[in-house]
Length: 182
Ligand SMILES: *[C@@H]1O[C@H](CO)[C@@H](O)[C@H](O)[C@H]1NC(C)=O
Image (cartoon, rainbow, N blue to C red; front, side, top):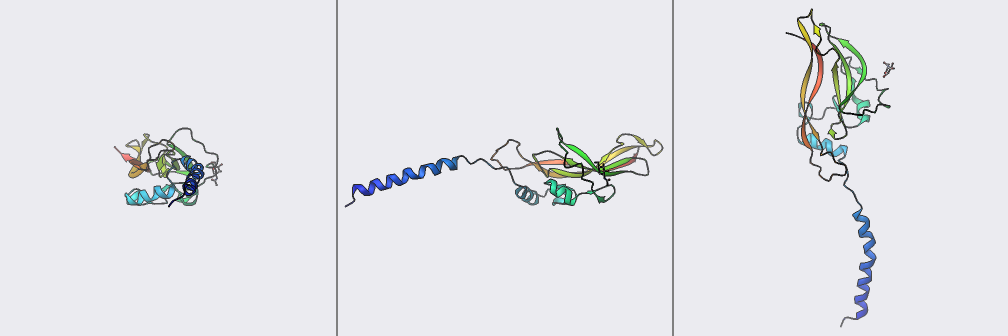
C-alpha cells in the first residue's frame, strides 16, 4: 500500500525544477553562423562556378584580409583603411590598391565590396570601373563594366529571426572595366 509521504516527495521535486524551466525560456534565436552559410552555399551551388571561391568572396573581414588580392594588379590588397571603415549604406566599396588603365584608356580599380549584414557571402572582391560611361578608344567606344552574375544568398533580415532559410540572391560581380567599341 502507498503512503501519503511518498506522494508529497514527488510534488516537492517538481517545484524545485521550475526555476530551470524559466531560464530555458530566455534563449533567443541565434543568427546564422558563417559555417552554416558556407554549407548552404555549397549545397545550393552558390558562388563562381557553383562553389565557394575564397579569391572572390568572403564571409568575414578576416577572410578578406587573408585571401583577397587586388584583382587589377594581382598584388596583395592594401587593407590598411579597412580597420576604420564604417559604411552607412550598402553596398559600399573600398579601394584596396592601385588602379590601372586598359589600352582604350578605361580605368579599373580593385575594391572590396561590403554588401551588408544579411548577405552571404557578405564581402566580394571586385573591379570598380572608375571611368564608367566615358568615351574611349579615340572615342569609338565607351568604358563598360563587365559583370559575372553570381548565385549568392541573403537572409530574412530581422534580428533574432528563427527562420534560417536563406533566400536566393543573384549578384552581378564586377570583373573588369573595358573599352567596348560601339
Ligand atoms: C594603403 O592605403 C592607404 C590609404 O588607404 C595609403 O595611405 C597607403 O599609402 C597605401 N599603402 C600602400 C603600400 O600602397
